[in-house]
Length: 250
Image (cartoon, rainbow, N blue to C red; front, side):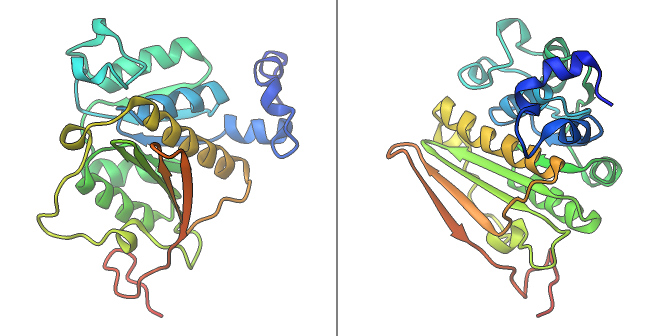
């Protein structure tokens, strides 16, 4: 049962027919892993903490730099040189002390992924590292964990839900084959308008909350945002029979 304080705190969310008290209880009993506490991880973690997700594990081995402050809205100048995950955790706990925030203050490797991913209900990719994304994609497939991917550079953003629980769900590597020496496109190389990250992160948070409360979420749909023209486009994608990550046989 929800406490009277929880009913009051989450009242605007509980009012939604597709969530209600039952959905709020599901959120309280849920856990997520957020990979990366940069421009996407900041707003995603803020929304999920505010929504009352019971346990949030945040992973990032990087430190706050002055160039981050233009878009990583949890941080300020006092956080410079501090670990991003540690700094974010203290802010998130102030926002909602009822949520259990766990910190991984290092970059995820295979051993850490194998330990943490089986513990959570949803994994959210907020990294800017393609190699990390391939690794997390593979471990999510292995343990059948929904994987909510987001990316943004310049004025453009992408979002995709990968759900290995569904037999026909394409994975990240189906869409973006692992090409050796592929160029690394991220905020450092291309630049980014801060609010683009907030738009993509907001959609990642929406998709995650829907998964956790049992609301249907479309997989195999790549959502593309064009910030210059203020347009969304959706593209249907399919599993690839030769994907080395899925190892699908059709």
